[in-house]
Image 1 (cartoon, rainbow, N blue to C red):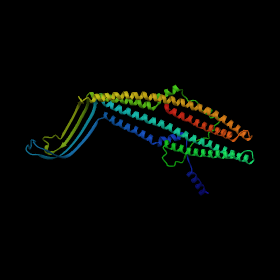
Image 2: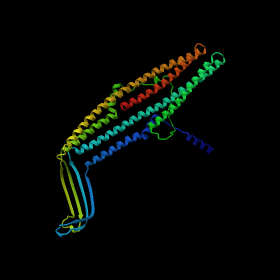
Image 3: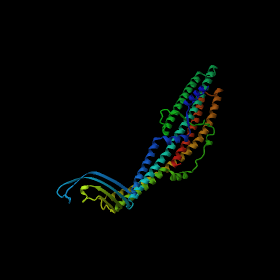
Image 4: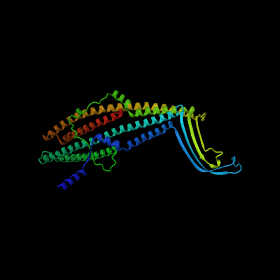
Length: 428
């Protein structure tokens, strides 16, 4: 008995599928997506560049060790011949910036704001990924719902074929009705088959967005059966007005924060370039110890030096002026990029907001269309049964009913797609 139970559980585990909600899929995407790993690595690299630049504030300590041979002539002990000896030398040096008129500070701030820019770019990529996952998820749900609509269509056509055959056998209807019913049944089965393939294609798109690398990933998305009655009543208005959405976008879109960081980076770079006009003050010290026995009288064994130093590059052929001018131009470019981004974000937020209500109204009208089409189909069936209409009228009414159902499904998920796009457009 235990062996049978173990085998049964093993079979169940082999056929078990993971079930993912949209939140689960977003977490998987954040963990697996190569594009997010790239943007995250770019941010980490920018942090390392900032750490490298910040090290300029700290003392620079160098140790140098030398072992070799040395030759020297014209020394007091033996002025006429070349004297050779072994040499051991060690030198420890230290250099510390005291003041450089903002050159180091500007350089450090440049890399700091560059890192902030990469951080915001990475956060924007994450926001875009959430939108893409939601859209791919809704596409799968839409495909599932359309399969159910097409299954109903096949069932209706099977019923109609059975009815047409019975009417023909009873001499009530002609054979053309049977032929038409067979054609419509085959067409409905074809549409069902296509929708099954569309579901596979939707899962393939979802795999790519989420970052599932397996050639075959056994999973399915969490979905409930879509009840089409009163779908519109389940929809709610967006939580912000259009003006509030645009204001929210200006405060929260990571893309804008990236351009603000770029402006600060350009300003810091300009500060660093302008510092080239001024001197650099630094403290330097070194200690040297060397051993060359034959040259003790001319070469000290121990030596040290400590001094304040001032370096001033008086002229570089206009390089400093050109560099400063280029940095000022870059500031203006960054400011223009910020303004251009604001205009784009305003347009995106406005279009996305309008599209939400466009889709919401479409759901309302599609709901009404379905109700009317269903009534028309019921009437057409009764008229056909009583011989008051032909098969063409019945077929048109049935197809109108199925098309209305499909349109409602598509508009419903387009509404949630529009919500995902709007959330992304304003930085939610």
